[in-house]
Image (cartoon, rainbow, N blue to C red; front, side):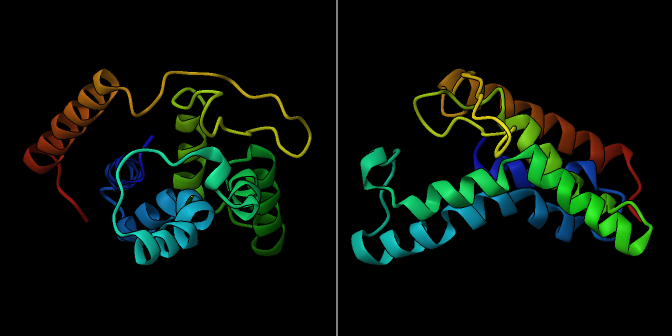
Length: 157
């Protein structure tokens, strides 16, 4: 899924929470960590370019960051570590979990399949591309419906 939709879905999930903006940031964090520096570097070097870059033009550190931030194994290690230290479930990290879970079926093997079992396994699912026009229309239509509902019928804290 695209980074904006990750943020919007996470914000909607945490809509009634005081920390909804932080939760939305955490929901986009996996992509920011993996692609942020590469995006900014290319933005200054080449200007704003649309479309996906050639895989061979993407540096190795992006793939390493992607593996770490899109792994359920790493996510669970972080959650269990925080729980062990604080004795509290870090609900705020739900956006990270949602990010991984939604990326599993919305990425293809051809372009950044989600390494959700990394580093235990390299198994990846080839789903439908989040860049598919029909998927984008459905996804953003659902977001509009959800936000209309939240704004019309929900009282925020």
